[in-house]
Amino acid sequence: MTTESSDTRPAGGDQSVDRPAPTEPDERVPMVEVIEHLLANLDAATLPLDVPGVVAARQERDRVATQVRHHLLPRLRQVAAPVIVVVGGSTGAGKSTIVNSVVAKEVTTAGVLRPTTREPILVVHPKDADLLEGHPVADIARVTPQEVVPRGMALLDAPDLDSVHAANRGLADELVELADLWVFVTTGSRYGDAVPWARLHEARERGVSLAVILNRVDPTALATVRRDLFERLETQGFGSVPFFVIADVGPHEGVLPAERIREFTQWLTVLGAKSQSRSIIARTVRGAWPALRQDVQQVAVALEDQRRHHLSLRNQVRAATTASAEQVQEGLAAGGAAVGAPTTAWLAGASSGGVLAPLVAAPANLVESWRYRRATTARRAAVASLREVSMSAARTLISEACERAERAIRAGATHSAGGSQVAELVSAEEAAAARTERLDLLFSEWDEVVAELCATLTFGADDAGLDEASKAALVEVAAIGLDGAERAVARLLSERGSAVVRRLRTDLSTWARVAVEGEADVFLAALSTLGVDDGAARSLRLRASELKGYQ
Image (cartoon, rainbow, N blue to C red; front, side, top):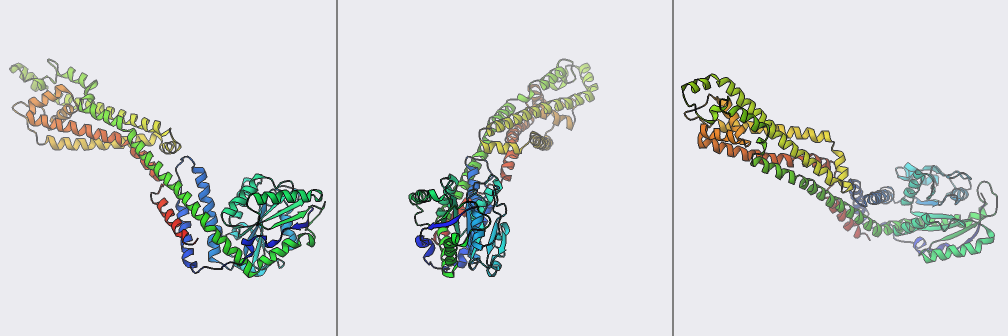
């Protein structure tokens, strides 16, 4: 591990870092409350629907929540805590060696194996260590007290931003989020890498104070590399950032000689002074508001997109049932349930000499009357059987319409990721079970209404040997649209009976439509379980407006 101090721009070049700034604003307590409310709103912003752009929106929400939870809120609650200086950068940049050299002791692993930093190490003066108790950084980094660390500052050796391990990359990003000051370490061969430059821009946008160390530079190329990197920094708006250069001096073990790291260490010591550390903290907190407000508004936009897609999916699911619902209503109103088995059964029983013939016409003579009376029991059984066949046909007609509605819902759901997500939450078995329960309730209530209405009906002079149960069964068969049964009701129960038949047919067709539309219910219930909150975006916009008052 071979580096030495060679060159540096004046540490005072970063005016935003070195110039003292106001410490704690008078609004500290209400500011803490605003940030606490903001964090609660971010945690509640679940973004559950798989809509276009949601992956990036969830990442942005998580990043903002991490920044608030791990940096802003702890910093506002404990302003006396030391400045968190995160030493980060690309793989092999020598971050660990620099941290070890600052404390003149190997406190973090440095070596040729990549990645070397698997556990973040936070070195802090022993008198400052207690101030980090309860701070989120203590949950993700090992706190190592060292007397040589300047008071008012904690130095953190972070994993590589471009680590081959996703967990390390994520941890590095998280640590940058909680930094008061980010020291970006790069090398003569890696300073052009895209990842760290992108993070530099992101950190600056969020108001994080910055410094740059160009490490392990070949002395023969030192001037060229330093000039090129300096021009890049100037071009991209980092010209005022403190800039240190440490030249590569060949094979080296352990920490760097003190003279090689002295200028960076002295700069840290200056920054650790109370006025300077408070300046960094105040600048970072103050600089976070504009970017934070914009980030919060972006999350609010994503929440509004969720709400729009949620409403669209609800409408789409309900609309998918309309065609089948209208079809079954029209079919039942036109007597469609009587086609097939009910009609066949009626014709077989009501033909001349059949057991149901007395329902069609009165006996022509005494012999026929006697024969009809002897078949009373069989006739009642035939009417009951006809009723079962007719009700089965009606239920099948409605059930098939429900199945068509379910298929239409699922077909429409495939047109969007959110729709597919909802459809996958509802199994075919669950939909079928809900359908069975719904149709059971429909026909149970139908039977109650039939019994209630038929109780008001009385036979005329001819009852064809039917009792109360048979009378109700005949009315039900007529209500599903069987013409012969309807004529029989008109003959035996007069106009009052025909009015009941019409009423029941209207009820059945209307209820059937509702039952088919009910196919949407199980899908809408699944959609509601995803937890799209109509008021979440409004709450975040309120938080964003409150943040504006602290800019």
